[in-house]
Image (cartoon, rainbow, N blue to C red; front, side, top):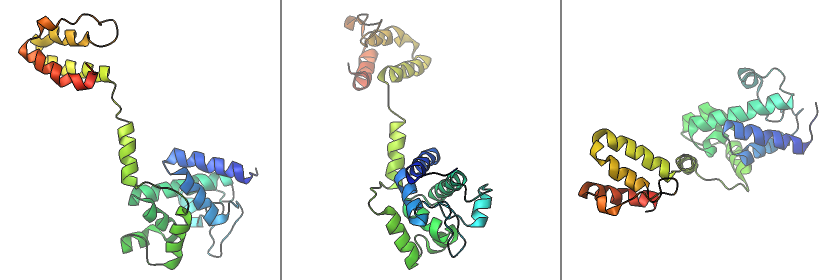
Length: 206
């Protein structure tokens, strides 16, 4: 099956999302490597859209390196492996170009003009956050707090050690929107539950 450039880019972006790679970087790698030519063969023997060397392609399960789908899947997967191994795009791209052994040997981008230019060319015009910041943002996104769920979990843990606070905790829950609204009675607060209210106030918006 033949693909036009737009279709190839769409496949690359989807595979990049599947493997946790920046889609713009993945597309740029294909552009720099082969100009999106599924039939490209370099003087060194690299093949296809992502210019995979035969041994690398076989190791990634590619049976036909000139099949765009196989080549793109393997190429993006290999880039993802380097990103996980080295932790940032500079080293990952250098490893893609010069081999991971050279990146380890030199502790970063090797002092090869070709590799240094390759990294710059791939990243040209692409705004990248450091991988550590990106990972932190992803982690924060996965830790968005639902105040009611947080309070419920907090309540459950506290009741294991402070069962006498049951009534006052339900009173606090009554301050939340929902069926329990209106059940809160400030006159029933003990010193302990007043302190509990202070702790939970920032979390539940009391």
